Image 1 (cartoon, rainbow, N blue to C red):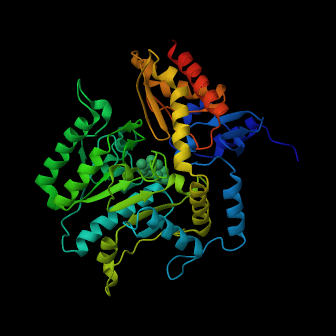
Image 2: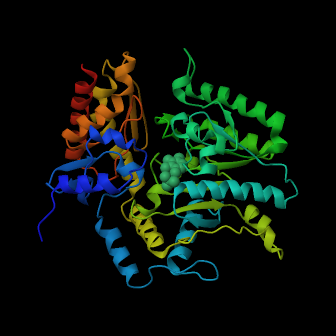
Image 3: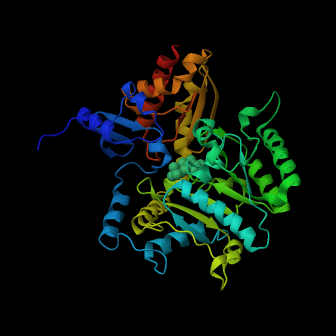
Amino acid sequence: MKQQSSSDWIARSLRSVWHPCTQMQHHEEVPLIAVSHGKGAWLYDHEGRRYLDGISSWWVNLFGHANPRINAALKDQLDKLEHAMLAGFTHEPVIELSEQLAALTGHALGHAFYASDGASAVEIAMKMSFHTWRNAGYPDKQEFVCLQGSYHGETIGALAVTDVPLFKDAYGPLLRAAHVVASPDARNASEGESSQDVARRALQDVEKLFEERGNKIAAIIVEPLVQCATGMAMYDPLYLELLRELCDRHHVHLIADEIAVGCGRTGTFFACEQAAIWPDFLCLSKGISGGYLPLSLVLTTDEIYQAFYSEDITRGFLHSHSYTGNPLACRAALATLQIFRDDDVLNRNRELATKMTVALAPLAEHERTQQFRQRGMIFAFDAIEPDPAKASSFARRFFTAAVEKELLLRPIGRTVYMMPPYVLDDEEIELLAVRTRAVFESVIGA
Ligand SMILES: *Cc1c(COP(=O)(O)O)cnc(C)c1O
């Protein structure tokens, strides 16, 4: 059989596949890349061109593409059980994964409810919060609070607590309005203000709202430490610590959406650990399956679990997805957690992050960048582009220039960021840093 070239695959894709988060017309200019295979931090196309996956394929991949250990676990699982429904049935992978996740929270969050996509986990946390209050005799607690610039997914419920106008505005009429409070984004610091001062100032907004309407509010949802989709906005852990207190005082649930920041991205396994708090609901997805299979879940407390435990069926959480707790996805997650233990990943990542920061110093100090920031394995800076016309096309021009230099990077607005898999070697770190600088300078015209 004749081998198809990249351009054949691309033409066929553009005819039949509707690609996500894309104005398809832009592909008249921006190249579509047909991936043939992956290995480690690299993706390869059909002509053998390679791309260093600097953003972990939308933040999901942790230990490289085609990871031998995760592959082996999945092959083993495939011959045992591909899927069984999780109502009335259970299986080894989902039990072990739930136990291990509970242990990672010190059993503060001892119950795991499963879905497939991140947005579904957010919907589950929202429904569970509302239903917990309803079961407890507070059916009026129906409102939700999110942060300025928040991102929690694209389904109708998750989009309602998302504050990214580009994704949200078109669907405004369909959404149930949420309260939007100030972001603790450390970039909001005014002269002489520390990131902790910004956190305290942002919390005043929450406190005022809780005082006025706490009895109507079910939950506040936050992305702990880093608001990724809005442009890697980073903030001080103090915000989470004080928010936990406010939620307790006003009887409002705290939902931690760790879909992007969980699984070691911020330096600890869960971002919440850096504030020494646990939320009432913790959403996990993306990295938990190592970037292999769609898997999401909500961890919650015994107390909330007990609020549903009853002889009355309607007090139960009657939510499901067809692939809830899929054994293959759970097995990929177990292999991922095994790698964390075997390779002492969190400690090793500290060294990796230091090397990255050193390699990126010339960009951090560049006269056309500002606000270089880093937390764990997330690195970002903002381009200075005074010309609004050029600024609006910056991300797309950067992506295209990066691809030509074998890099997969997708800036958000003027924010260039890196969120690489945890497997970069010294050479790859250097290549990523040096070429990103070259791409940056060519795009900015410096
Ligand atoms: C990606 C993301 C989601 C949505 O997850 P999907 O799997 O894309 O539905 C929700 N919250 C955060 C913080 C995310 O980064």
